[in-house]
Length: 76
Image 1 (spheres, rainbow, N blue to C red):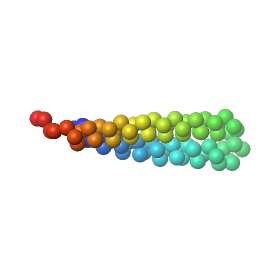
Image 2 (image 1 turned 180 degrees about the horizontal axis):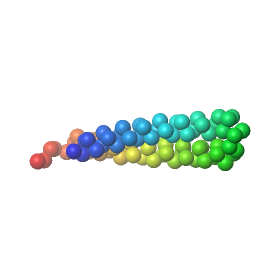
Image 3 (image 1 turned 135 degrees about the horizontal axis):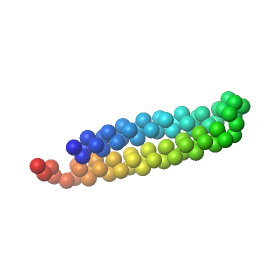
Image 4 (image 1 turned 30 degrees about the vertical axis):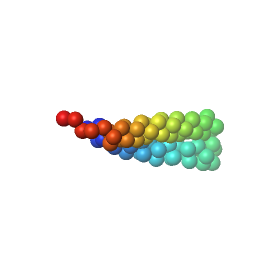
């Protein structure tokens, strides 16, 4: 069960990295600055950085769970 949770967490973190990529690329598009202003660009930039940061932290913990689950013997 622990491996399943870790794998689902990795999938979730990869999806969040994709969302962070779109946030960060949207922050540097000229249309965003022209239509919505610098605050929209700043919001997208900060949001993308935060989402990516939390996704990386989640991925690290999931990898740690997978490696610790592989080293422990299965007890039932």
